[in-house]
Image (cartoon, rainbow, N blue to C red; front, side, top):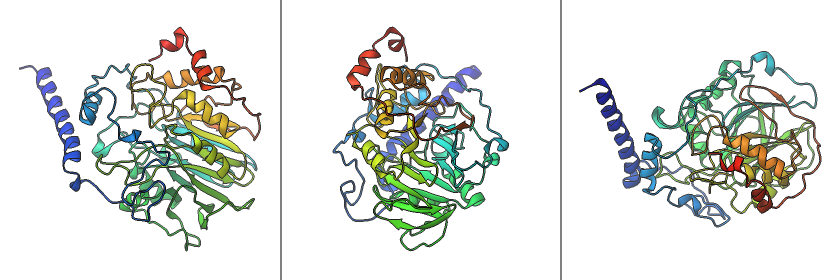
Length: 425
């Protein structure tokens, strides 16, 4: 028996163990199910689990390809799913500490760390979205391995004041990274209901935003709620817009997604996007991870902003699970990312959620290539979607740039019916 045969058999055994673990998570959920949140029922919480309030149950449908979730994980693990090849690694030039220094009044800088992790800097705050510095996105070191190193070495990060955590999927909630940030900087963490339980389990204390005067830690809010921060100081909670103020307001807004860490704990914690109003700098929208759903969450996010949205962080990847697919239930693709940008009225957008972890079937360069084509078809002026690279700081333009005229989605799809788009995988 050759070494190659032995190696293949060992790999096969390990893969079967992963499948068995996944099946066990659904067969004996009492061992893995966790209660992250207890509270009154609402339009998106039934007393036990959260759900998308637009009436969609698409997060519980069988995954494409047949064979249920066990079959999906088997195809992912073995690579037998017809996916185009991805590079094992891509070159990254991480930003140096000297490139991430203080900003003059009115300035804004964004540095894409990779996937949904972005460092957004203003004169008042250094903000991190869904920070992930781990090599893999999954439990116990399993899961997709990053092909791009983080765009900033952790040691070169400036002091972080505010961390936004959109939901509990491993590619967005990296507890090891969050604990490192807490130990180093004691920032304010803002997340949605139930996720604070996971952060507490990592040693990050939760704070009651109703009676906490000035303290860092985790604040967990429902859709439509907001909190006030100033530097690293939390200053209470407001149920309604407060108008112009000399401090930063973070609003938790609805998105269309789902949550789970162990399969059987599905939707025990809420998912969300965020609007951050920074006085003198404009508003920042971070979508986290979302499908289109009813699409009304876009208008709700715009309405939550006190100031016009200067920067929108919009996902464009993990949208293709079958050939020619342009969006999935839980992820918008480039076409709908353009519509999100238009309806937000944002000055600048940065496309995120691609090119770091291989999560679906599209080719490595398909998301940004298709985005560029969709933006042209929708009449989005060049440069409004900033052509960012991982690790390269980008100065965000001032507010303005003009509204983008509405173009019907069907017209955009017809415009994209070309051999070049057809050839994209």
